[in-house]
Length: 311
Ligand SMILES: [Zn+2]
Image (cartoon, rainbow, N blue to C red; front, side):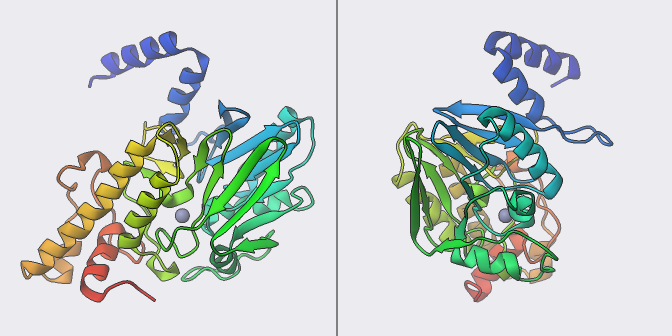
């Protein structure tokens, strides 16, 4: 698509859909090099919305009974998010900070909530990995979870009920989905990469086959009109969507595993398989595979096929 045509489509779509759509289109695009990312708050429905700046998408709830935040990006971004939340809530502080998992682009900003968040919640494994991330340096200082769970955890904030669920090992061994039940909105953390090759943290217990099951269980646990917030999206794509987006991502994970399996059965070596960086047939929108590595989807698929799930 030529730039002229693209500009026309963007301008036309924005005019037709209004300011919210314009902001979504604006934030979905790449940040020009050298320009800092801007903080953007986007309401979804019934007091729940999402915040984007840099790092994994943050979810938030502000109602008459309290304020809840899901994930925290990095310290500077968390500070910008908190300033915006305070503007919108009348500076009522934060009742709950929930981490979907331990990765630094989702929990690194917890430190900015010290003395502000009354409670910090995460899966027990996520909390453990925040203190000691497998294959990475532990943080020098951080606000760690004070409340952990293994299967489910829930709390009421005003007239909203928040439910955290762990459906098994997937992106890490400690992922949780966070459901705002009355709003009918779910924060997926990094269980959802929208049409983008995911990080698969095998050193932290990821299992791609398990991830497919987790997505199926998440779809089954929610309604057809549930809106899901995604941890990340490919350039220009939305960070929210519906169950069809989850199903597509599940199918992608299955396709990477099938691809790796077919290469092994054809007698190709590890080096030959990991050198294949072309887009996966049927999932071209995900783009080329990244560099081989412990957290690369194709590498992990190869290791799962040849060695089984990691410890
Ligand atoms: Zn992650």
